[in-house]
Length: 364
Image 1 (tube, helix red, strand yellow):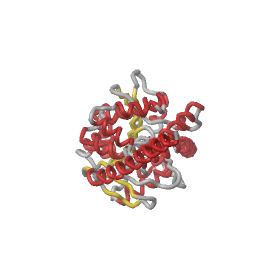
Image 2 (cartoon, rainbow, N blue to C red; image 1 turned 30 degrees about the vertical axis):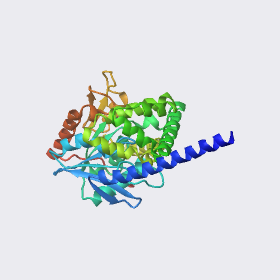
Image 3 (spheres, rainbow, N blue to C red; image 1 turned 120 degrees about the vertical axis):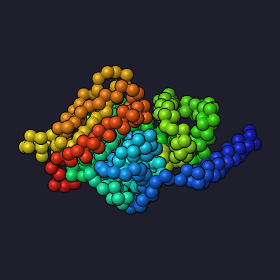
């Protein structure tokens, strides 16, 4: 009995060591084969990757969802770069950017984004394009630095009301998302995620499905949904996405950004309340006449969410655009519609620079 146990332990140790070596060699190969397409800028808390295409003004700045990298904007970014400057970047820990210590919230991301854009010479006013959680960051920046904003395009944004006071179900989702991320980081560190993704790329997802089933149906369904969205990207980007999610830092960053969603929602709600006080005496919308387009995914229905209609009313020139194709990832499902909405916003800014809301006394 003791001899059998020793054999099992030695075999497990060998497999673990082999996995670590496999992961180390794969990471080294990724760094060589998948270099950052843009610039790596020292943000004080680590390096941040920013990728700028095109020329012209106002520049368009893309803000990704909670755990997405700049790669998810590539199709739209290339289209926008045909008529103005287009800037996509990776938040802390995502894509080619390094991790940071401390809170990962929308309020902190605002300051970092402004510093990053200044470092690469992308001057305001900007047209901010935010997807999902990225809408928190775009709105937080617009409310705190109104004079730097030319326009806003929000793609199926989550609203402060969605996550300001999480329900028990939402708290369970956050806890589950963080646990899944931590487990993913451990599996990535020993090469198992890399192996599963490599087999999936070759058309065999059996190993990945076996591993995922160990973590329940929710984890399996979540990963399958993410993989489904990734496959909508141009095929030439898949190796870079695979390289990013084969590394533990991406999973740790996802855990951190997921954990910061409620605090980000509360911070934005407070910023909206302060802006409401300022604008009520003037009788104007919170964002004045800043062009604002809220692209609302129907998720199979026919009407935009009421919350999105409320967001559109933040500006006197706000409107809701219903995305009839696809769902939450409208910029992947229907990039042409998103590009056209951005083009119209850019042209509005060019024709008549908007009169923005009065900047707050203290930046958010």
